[in-house]
Amino acid sequence: MATAAPSISVQLMQLAPHIKDGHQSFSAGYQSFFNTVFDGGALEPKARAAVALAAALLLGREETVRSFLATAKQLGLGNEEIAQVAGIVEVLKLDAVQRPAPVAAAAPAKKANTCC
Image (cartoon, rainbow, N blue to C red; front, side):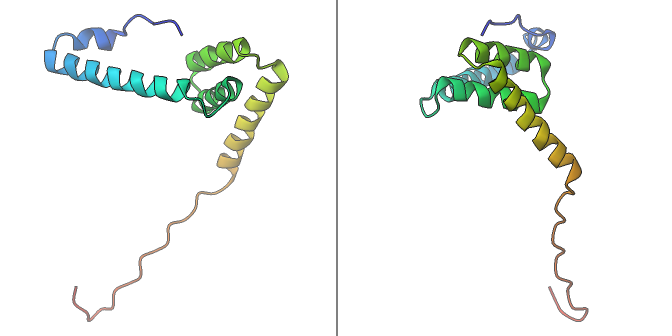
């Protein structure tokens, strides 16, 4: 993936060294984690691309979707496969909207004349 120019907020963080240093440390850790996940060998590259595309679609982040869509196509995902990934995401999103959230079990009531 191409490296984007730093955002305005990242540029402004340069004004405070302790914030800048913390961000650089976090960024390095994140990049290491990202590389470990995306370079891992448990999934075939096409499967990894499909999972990443599904997650990006679920989050609704257009720029991320475009990036992972391009990667998925480069790795050989065809239009039918991409459409099925998108369909699965939509089905799960609709299911989440239509199905009521589980109700937490109520804590048992304390007896009136008992201590702690």
